[in-house]
Image (cartoon, rainbow, N blue to C red; front, side):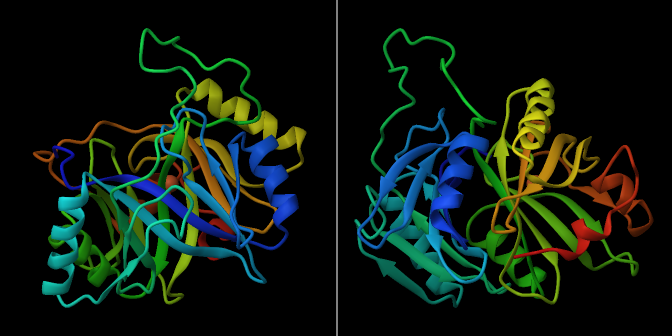
Length: 308
Ligand code: FE
């Protein structure tokens, strides 16, 4: 799809149990760039190659998980239109004033049927990746930790998958890229949706635990960098879930691990380029193991059960 409405996952606010420990983790292990704290004590980060002021906001809380998921839209006119479209669809919206998040314009907030809080916004201060826009260098020198290119997508769980899927497709203009069907051969167990050329920008999984996070995902450029990420996670004794390995679904290569609060994250690369004239890829229940983990062809218990 031409990227003219919702462009990409732009930011998310993650709950952490110990802010200072988490700041160290996201700086030294994940290799994000610290962008400061706001008056309420929230801590801001960006991936080094991202242009906008921040993509990950950490908030100290007594339980882990995600407060909200933000998508950047093309411009203010698009924001107004999508807000009107959401209302017409029967979704109530709330305007969060500019500046409530640092360096960020007005946000349109709404709840999806799976219980998650989403936001759309059009404005965030561009700080660049340090290379400039005039005759730039090709690489960013001095990276440390895993140092992903960008915050890439989220996998989130809730019971009314059909409701969230339809809202994202019918109102926000996402495409259904891949789906896993349940044993009945009809009902979606999971869906991968794209608002861009990426194989997915968000995935929903049917799960009775509403408003839960399975993982936030960060993009790397090569399989070697995924392997290096595994080395870095071991050097820092980070809690590993599974990987490195490949997905059948979207074909990405991946590692899943946990931050100090138990929030799962993914560092991955690959996946095919998506175009809106492609047909939806369907996975049947009996092949779900190969779909999720292409090499081991079976799911691990932790991957299925742990959400925050
Ligand atoms: Fe993922």
